[in-house]
Length: 245
Image 1 (tube, rainbow, N blue to C red):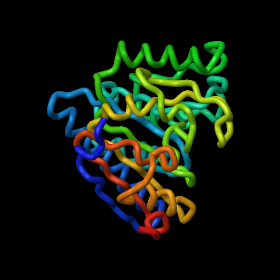
Image 2 (tube, one colour):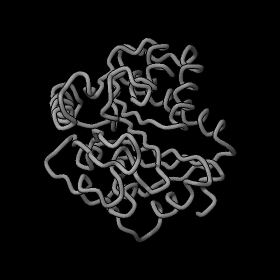
Image 3 (tube, rainbow, N blue to C red):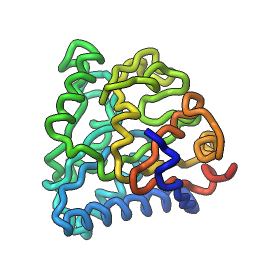
Image 4 (cartoon, rainbow, N blue to C red):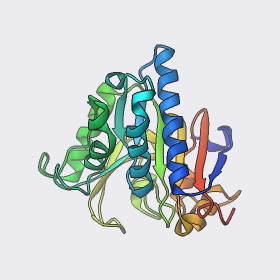
C-alpha cells in the first residue's frame, strides 16, 4: 500500500459537535442515496464513540426524508469490543439503539461477541470469513473516530496489530482503553475503502488530528496516518479539534 499515491486529505471544519454531526449525517445519507440511484448496494463501515453516536442519531432523525432503501445498505463495523452481545460497550449495540433498528436496516454484520465464540481470536477469524463471503471487495465509506492518542478502530499506537499482514480482522489484547479485549479490522482491510472519513470533536483530539495530518510522522505513533481512501479522505472536525492545524 502506497498512501502517497492516494488523494490528499480534505478538511472540513464546523462550529461545534452538533453542527458537525448534522453535516456528516446528511452527507452520509446523500452518498448512500446517490449510490442506490446508480444501482449500487453500498457497504458502509461504522465506528463507535461519542461523536459517532451523535451522527447516528442525526441519521435516524433525517432518514425519513432521505429516500434511502435501508434494506439495500450493508453495514459493517471497523472494530468491536469483545464483550457480551447485549453489553452497552458494544459498538453494534450503540449503533442499533441510535439508528440501525429505527431505520429498519436488515443487512448488519456484527462481530461475534464473547457469549457467542470462546475467544477474540475466534471472533476475528469468523468476522474475516464473513467479510470474505458477504463483502463487496471494498468499503464504499468507512468512518473513523480519532482517539486522543491518534488511534483508529482498535489499532492503538505501537500495538502489534499495526503490522498485521494477510489478515482482515485481528484480536486485540491489552488495549490501553477498556475493555482490554477487542477485535479490529486491519490496515489491509481498511485500505480497500473508496472513501474514508475521520470525524473528531473536542480540544482533546486536536493534537492527534494535527499529527495525523502533518507532512511527516510515523503511523506507529499515530495510527490515523495509516489509512487513506482510494478516492477520497476527509477529516470532519469542529473548531476545537481543528485548533492546532
